Length: 429
Image (cartoon, rainbow, N blue to C red):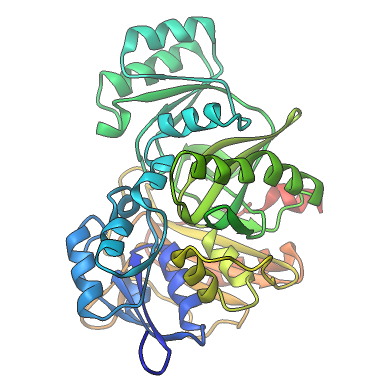
């Protein structure tokens, strides 16, 4: 920390999650300078960005050293799984995010499922497989509908919801023999299909100490009515009425606390985000899987709802220190709508010029996900999920109205979006 007690903060990543983190850090009284690597077009308009890829662990450590960084906030899962936090710690640089051992909760679904079984955390019945024959034998004993998952990291797309035996066999052979999802599909998890409503809880952890962010729901399917291919997320909102105070307490009692106790028992010093994907079944909440970083696009609604300064909390987690008992949140609701490129999550064109409104209401944030900034200062598309338009309002319907009003003012060739984000909650309300 510098003489004026202001922090230099490096945000690692290039997506909407990282732009939301940059915005939150810029609002912190503790932040002196915020930088990003590699960043995107939106971040480049606000902070210095450096062209170091998230996979380049030595390069990221060298950048943190050169720029005299006090705190690194690691956004995506890939650098966490590669041990970036371990390398930064070895260099004497504080980092928010789990060490490599803890990151295996996300980088290996097989490891994660075995962890649940070992620590008696409620989840779907499952089996792990690296060969086709035993996987097909398991399928005979556990007929479709069933879920086939690539065990490794697959950018949120390595999950096949097989409604028929034929679909399940195709998914199994495609991953284990056909190279679907590459190395990530060399081991698969076959698990029981759970039924109910999905929701997620984000936890900031420091050992067994933790603090929860509001419960949220996202929309993974590309099409309205939750149809079409799985994506990284087409929108999200919080809070959700699906998680009542009673259900929240049950999740913390049966899932969150046993997870943190289990990690400690396994010799894993866990610091950072735990993002629990949950199914609210008729037999109570069950965990589908963990991510070990903030969700995207959920971060784009969660961080604006945090009323105070989040940086001291992230700093305490990075140091393994006690966390506050709870966080203060704004009243009301938040929603983010993703503007995507035509063809996503399949192939899509890049380089389309983006026309943004000159001014937006204070309740709105336009978060850049897949964008680049040209030398002339124009902003162009550079990814499948291009922008996120997040809005805060007293009610979810008002947040939706605000978000879609701005969405319609943004133009780029091939723009598409879902117009039913939050539909379950709006029907509930």
